[in-house]
Length: 275
Image (cartoon, rainbow, N blue to C red):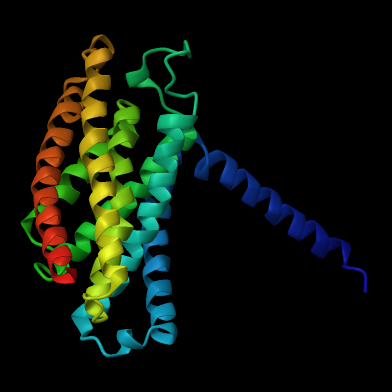
């Protein structure tokens, strides 16, 4: 049956209005920081609910957990999804995209940004604030003061870089460290499932060791070396951006070293038990 002309015209009108809304607001450069943060918050809600739904039907361990353990289980599923997303975005911008390449002559590296790079950071901002909210809500069940400091510093630095467009290269360099999050979460899952003595737990521990060493130790050294080579450009940033480039990675780097020491001790203990 043919659609009435008036109905077809009404549908076409709504379609045109929707296209104008998306073009002029949702993906318009001035609004990208806001829409991406909202998108990140929405994605967090969807990821959390999906983790809960999938775990209920496919993991027997989940149904036997306490309420706070189920919340942490779902929250770790959310953080794993975010880690995969932001690691992929960070690797692309740091190593494959020409946006921050020295061969490009599009202005200072410290002031370069694009709609996509800003959007990528905005989604991450949404995650950091959502996760920080859950940490405060259930404090200290989901993490102590070190998690609060880590998320607060990360959220502030990423937010500033997103809105100002400054230092996005260094922000993405630091965010590559999220590659260790899935392994850390897997360690918790295996422990909660009573598989602490399994070979999967041992293999995961070894993976954490090398991933942490590369992404949270050596990569931070490389970042500071890159800042040293481009200090003439870094010093032209706003005082806030200049401060964040040095302070946030330094504090996170110290925390990474402390946590790395604990990882080494834990791995040694696990290997000793296996022997």
